[in-house]
Image 1 (cartoon, protein in one colour):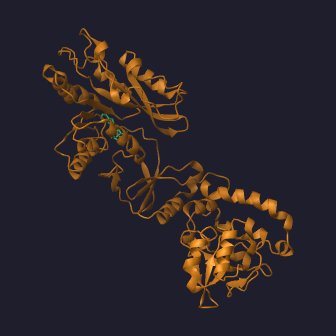
Image 2 (cartoon, rainbow, N blue to C red; image 1 turned 90 degrees about the vertical axis):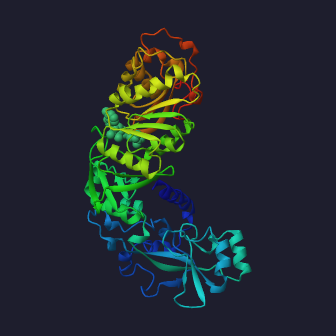
Amino acid sequence: MRIFWRPFGFLRRLFKVESCSVTKSESLIPLAWTSQKLSKAPGIFLLDQRKRFSTMPEIERGQRDSELFSPPSDVRGMTTLDRTAFNKTVTIPVLKVRKEIVNKLMRSLKRAALQRPGIKRVIEDPEDEESRLIMLDPYKIFTNDSFEEAELSILKQLNVSPQISKYNLELTYENFKSEEILRAVLPEGQDVTSGFSRVGHIAHLNLRDHQLPFKYLIGQVMIDKNPGITLAVNKINNIDNTYRNFQMEVLYGEENMMTKVRENNYTYEFDFSKVYWNPRLSTEHSRITELLKPGDVLFDVFAGVGPFAIPAAKKNCTVFANDLNPESYKWLLHNCKLNKVDNKVKVFNLDGKDFLQGPVREELMQQLGPLSKERKHSVHIVMNLPAKAIEFLSAFKSLLDGQPCGRELLPIIHCYSFSKDANPAKDVQQQAEAVLGISLDPCSSVHLVRNVAPNKEMLCITFRIPAAILYKNQALDLENQEDPPPFKRQRTDKAFSEEKTTIA
Ligand SMILES: C[S@@+](CC[C@H](N)C(=O)[O-])C[C@H]1O[C@@H](n2cnc3c(N)ncnc32)[C@H](O)[C@@H]1O
């Protein structure tokens, strides 16, 4: 929305400078650019409604100032969508040209031509079938003098008079963008950001309190204006339930929560009402996947429907993926098949702690045991349950106690957390240290994943698990543990200043 409106303010400032040359017609007909309803008021509109096009040597400045392309003002407060209430007539400057030169001319009039989605830039001339009318941008072309030198020169070459005329253009609901519609409907001055997360055919909104009286209309507008969206839902609580699936209210459309999404070239199918899916994590999923090398082992403790596990398996990693939610487990299995990696992913339906102390422990005993001297690949453990994952780090304490203590590279943990602290990177490191009871200073890095809410960040702390944690009762040689190359001195996101990023 801002992108759309900013130039208007800018133009208003320009117009102010121009206002020293007020003409008689300007003060007499200040409203002629506004809606059809006003045009019906006697004496206000210049044109006979049947005659949509007339010669106009100069377009009035007052008209330029009005918000031409915003819907009629009386849609404000509408809660049940009435598309016809958006009908409006605006007066547009046009240039009359011979039809055979239109294509040639359009190349040179790109700047001056009207650019509005769904509106043709060249139309038939109702009065002369040998001519066409080129619609011009009313914010750039006000008078015959508004053309630039180069434009005037091509007009001259093609023997076209720069005389502009005006044309009554009928705008309908279809010609407005969703932001324009919502800005016109919702209370003036209130935020209308109509952003939503797209999950397949579903628009997932998170409406604020002041938007709730308009929620059904907003849902309908989202469906109308976004091809491929057939269902609009609103989040109705914070995801504090165990499985992290959203509680939702249907705003508009056919209630069908079974959906299919593409992320980083992989396909996932699931029931959005029963599992966790967040399209805002796609960059994070690919960031972790890029750290992996073919042959590496990945344990995904809170795997959801597979957005870390499946790309890793495609990269020829051996994957152990787990989720406590039986529905996530079901769709994880399904998606492994769908993406043809079911032979590379072992899927579990356990509590994260049981997964770590069961299948993960067993596999680590193999990976780190005496037969693993020649092991070249890395072992990664992803823990994406930001509200709680840090607590699960305690499951690593003494996990391999009693096992021969290998000198091989120990597993690399990528653990997610939220922070509301002024120094979120330091805070997350301290959270992890508090659970593990050990300093992570020499061997961890923190990455800012995303801003979840004002003053709330989602972060990922990455560190090689210290041997002192895994083998509590063994004599250790920690000095020989190398730092993991991919994130040794890794910079955190630009949001963290160099000073804050003391963790390397
Ligand atoms: C934030 S989601 C992350 C899912 C997936 N990794 C992703 O990036 O989209 C966390 C997942 O952890 C699962 N979960 C919650 N508590 C769990 C637990 N105690 N043990 C294992 N999985 C759990 C939820 O069902 C959910 O699928």
